[in-house]
Length: 440
Image 1 (cartoon, one colour):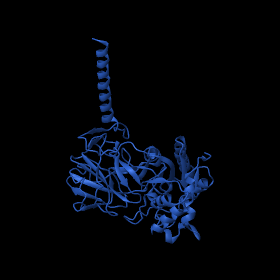
Image 2 (cartoon, rainbow, N blue to C red; image 1 turned 135 degrees about the horizontal axis):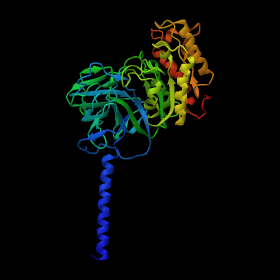
Image 3 (cartoon, helix red, strand yellow; image 1 turned 90 degrees about the vertical axis):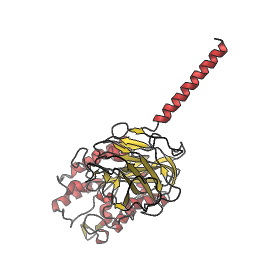
Image 4 (tube, rainbow, N blue to C red; image 1 turned 120 degrees about the vertical axis):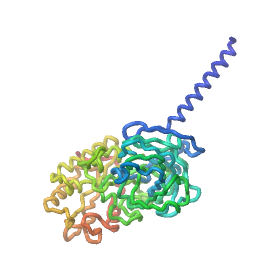
């Protein structure tokens, strides 16, 4: 063999290696780890659905914590049906990706078709013309999510508007068992028979549902956002008494302020509230329904896309729900542990005082003293980097153990729409910036 022929052969071998390496990279670059391991993907490659690398910051525009397994889905799940979740964005972007969770599943969940679209109108199951995008997972149109895990989709090019409804639709052809869901969505979503994932017309989505199923996050690639603020809370953050479909949770009002106010950090806001949530105690089951703030903090706060700051509004259910925690120091210690974990990631933490609840069916004078004990330590600066005084903002000045009537939804625990707005208006958005840590 001549030297020239040898060089030619060597060049050919190098070319083959490059091609094979590129194929391996394309096939596996989108495979991500779920809650405790890798997902599996399979299916045909779509045409031009995945977005290439671009400039901007990946940030959370919407999110909801998986809270349990939906009752009645233990055997069949929602096989043979299209689930169209309606979610509301906090910030805009030029590309998007979603997270699907099978955390409470007991067997693999096969999703053979998924899409993302801009809703044609608030709360509508119909898509805005030309916005339906087929989603892929590691370059494939279908994905199998093992029980207890989650998967992140590939990015798709789509102009995602801020303060708008988006449609996340999934289809599973086989029985999947328990459906992972968020029960207090305060937003109507939809279900249709058959595979109507890419159907822009919403006329066949005749079944309404007050739940979010499978989808737990919508991230956007944004040229405007600097990152994400995660709000970890209970029903007061979940917005359980806010007007259905109106996006009047206090976090929605906070998101509007961060979009529009001069000098405010341009953060996406993701609401990680679970009604009934506590700092210290999990619910029943394995994995636990309604996991405690301590047990879900890594998943729901620290691991969110682009997280820059965390807001924590937890503790009232530790006092109210069995087993009732009557030692304020125990609740404070739990909150301090959350702060320590956030500080290890370089994140700023803003906390909230616990609001009054006299008149609620669970009120007892000795529980009021526990609330006051927690608030005293929060105001003393020994818990969070900064705090918002929701107690002072919403209490009746003539009886500080009660909510002011105009801010009371009627159950003497949860705020009205006016109360939620008041909470967001009293929040100092500048407190989300800075790095000074609490003296723990």
